[in-house]
Length: 402
Ligand SMILES: Nc1ncnc2c1ncn2[C@@H]1O[C@H](COP(=O)(O)OP(=O)(O)OP(=O)(O)O)[C@@H](O)[C@H]1O
Ligand SMILES: O=C(O)c1ccc[n+]([C@@H]2O[C@H](COP(=O)([O-])O)[C@@H](O)[C@H]2O)c1
Image 1 (cartoon, rainbow, N blue to C red):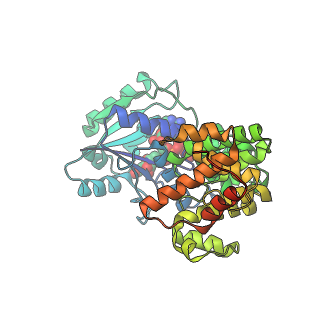
Image 2: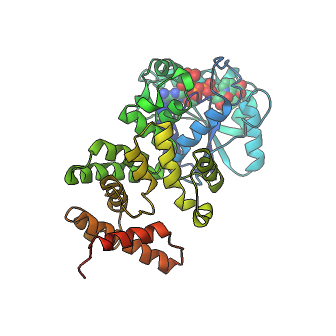
Image 3: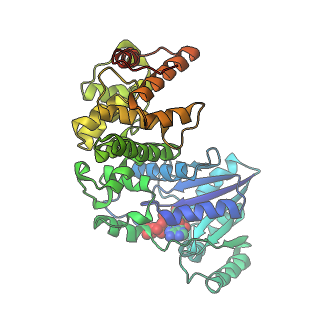
């Protein structure tokens, strides 16, 4: 098994780190990549107001999630959990102990590669791992790498490969911290990492969460969910805006509801219940145990109380999972957008899509009926609000005509 170890301070992790991780994964044909945030980097002092190591770890976790290779890309807290300076030789010894038969590769950019012989115990490092070096700028060519490769081979018998990053990202975390403190730099970050930074006010960012631009609002929303859900959220935003324009609702309210509708989707039951207590949401007995029913309520609260969204957006998000009687136009639009957004693919989706743009109430009734039928078939209890949504639509004279 081939394991890559990519250590860094990751303060914060940026697109340069991501490009390096992705390229090394392919170039070395790694079975596993361990992203290793350093607790105390041995060779530099962290700026005094640096985020906690927990924040750095959380941001690296967002980066790992974005690589979308579950089981192959992992974040290791080995150095975070160890006391004292985060010497790479100690880390490699621990990994070698855990995987005695694995071939280890240590990944590093030019700056680190050129100083490797000054690190603590370079003999152990080069004995336990091959070195995979990559350039950080256009200037980092063979002329820079070759003398160091020869030096390390001669003095330590080091095995070195150099790889070229196809899309160089000429940025450092130091430059980025400076940009962020001046409300710039988001283009060098994964949106979800940028959102995390804004939400936790890291690096002297001080945006008011109730006055975010759309890219900032999206970034915050994406920072709270898994990367694999982002295309769905983008699809709901797009579909909600289209439906709103078509049916004469406010497209910007629909957009905001779409962006935020699933923002608490990945919270476990207990934090969901805690948010409900915090915002005074009363739950019936089914909701108290059905985590799937809670994210719409807690998501609505986050939209309203954290991001300052108006009541209409709160209501639309609140009811987007179960529906209810007396739904507003915006409530219906979010419910349907969630059902038919372009990434959805299930039997009957085309019929629903067509209906959503010919008769919104019929589309609602069909959606609700199908949800009820599906839940019955799977033996899942149906929430009374969903039954009430169906009964209310029928009372309005809505029929499916077959
Ligand atoms: N833009 C980049 N492209 C490729 N590799 C990078 C880039 N930035 C950093 N690296 C490499 O990633 C590893 C971790 O770097 P680190 O987390 O210290 O980032 P940094 O941007 O160099 O941070 P700082 O500016 O705080 O020193 C190092 O091996 C470094 O050489
Ligand atoms: O072990 C050492 O002496 C040593 C010296 C310099 C750097 N490192 C490691 O190299 C990695 C990259 O460092 P940095 O500063 O670019 O984040 C990080 O994992 C550091 O712990 C390790």
